[in-house]
Figure 1 (cartoon, helix red, strand yellow):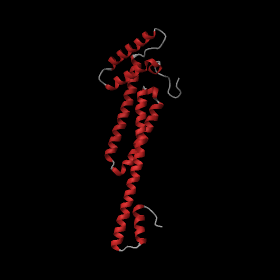
Figure 2 (tube, rainbow, N blue to C red):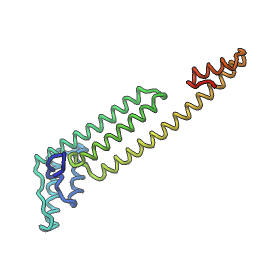
Figure 3 (cartoon, rainbow, N blue to C red):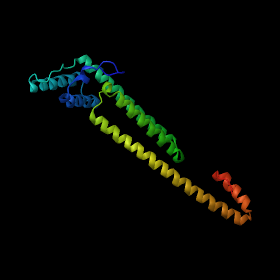
Figure 4 (cartoon, rainbow, N blue to C red):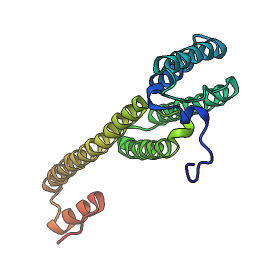
Length: 196
């Protein structure tokens, strides 16, 4: 029994040779092209074929339709949560300007990391398969890379801004005859640096 998650359901208890059938069923359920009853009938037939192939050497109980239904509901809930997360990120991205995109990237990356951890922690409950793990690993890697790119881009923009401010202040200082002290104070106000 898995600690903290309660009892494993029959789909989670299926042996390793059944994993491709479970992955197939999850894929079919997500496509939404067929009824759950049709998918279950084929799921049942595929598992029965595995039982026959192993001729009694591999014993397992084929999950009932109600068990399959609960699995389907969990999968649908997970898919809906992922789609909502994607929609929220898209909506936020549309509302942030370029200056705020670094913060949005950091928030999105942290959200993806949290989601990956949550999904891996609840893997059995959600019908998690190796293909899902690979997809999440790729998403996590991309989010981490985005954080790095975002940070370096922000640093580059800040450096360019500082250089433009320096140039503009020096040009105005020369034209207006400002003292070095006044120039240093203007730069300090704009760039947030202390004059030496």
